[in-house]
Length: 87
Image (cartoon, rainbow, N blue to C red; front, side, top):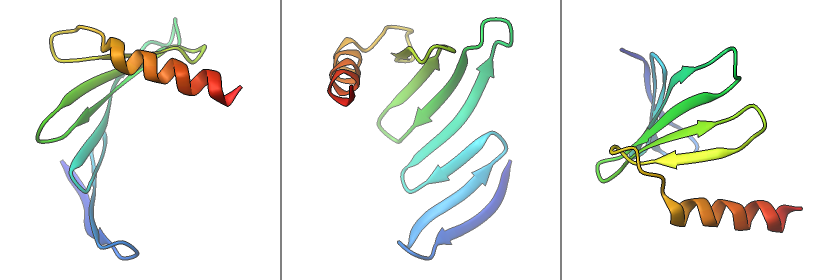
């Protein structure tokens, strides 16, 4: 269900709020689920070419999976590199 259709006036980029997230340019971002007991949350990122599910634990650990449920090791490595360089 689309809520607020419009174009970002600053950049002229398509932006629409959806029931569980938003569309912005060529990407749709939405929350999927969460677990109150363990504290993790899940969201999805969809484009015309890719679909990712992202899980984040309450401690901040990130897991990125493809539609088959396989972790993206290369992306995981890149996130670790970014995290280490930020310290």
